Length: 153
Image 1 (cartoon, rainbow, N blue to C red):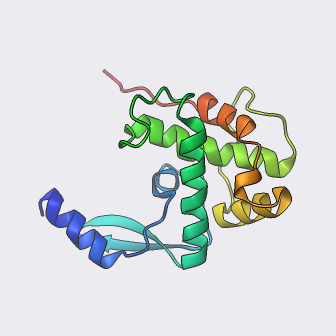
Image 2 (image 1 turned 180 degrees about the vertical axis):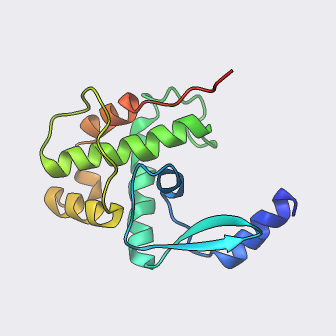
């Protein structure tokens, strides 16, 4: 199956894709609402809850907006390179975890895998009175500090 056919089939079979799919595949987090599906011998992730998916999409958009300078993006609205997407998703979720647990901003080392993205987003939203009120300056520090694996030569 060619890539364009795969993306058409994916859109038809998965109308509610998981916003943090790359982070879930990298095993830096988990989610209680994720549904795994197979399309053309590939695995895709869907969200079981439309309101939760909308909340995660709003969070990801805010993370991206607040991280433009930190990620040195020349085109803020263009597609992100894979490494930057991993920093945004995994680092952003780790920053949220630090906020939820009352820890200091990004320090040395990586936190263990997150237990549940949906619960983390819900807790942070309640704690700060909405996603727009999160202290993104602290979260962006975790985005920048997230280590990216380098290619092997």
